[in-house]
Image 1: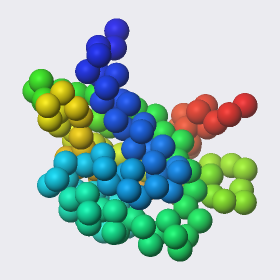
Image 2 (image 1 turned 45 degrees about the vertical axis):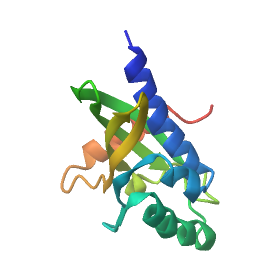
Image 3 (image 1 turned 60 degrees about the horizontal axis):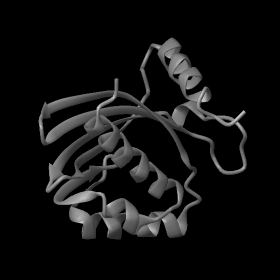
Length: 150
């Protein structure tokens, strides 16, 4: 059974993903603590909400970023006020109708509770390349495909 805290942490993650899908850099950045860190798919780093916003804004204004289809795989509490969320995500590029496996990614979030509200301390976006193990990429893609609207 999902506890209230697990639901709150999942909501934090999915609201963050929704902000990406809406191409809203301010909403994404507002999910972070003042000293939060974002590590992007390409390895770029941004620190704190203002820098994260400044990093994302030109991406959204210059590139047709596709939406994420995401699934939380695990929520693990480190303490009452700190949690690790592991998720997987995939994208359907603009103009396409299928997930592009080369865009599949692992998301790792460390979230902390500040005065009864959850914030992202670290968001890490790691490409799911599975070098030499194409069956793992296929398995992940199928798992994500199940999230797509029918």
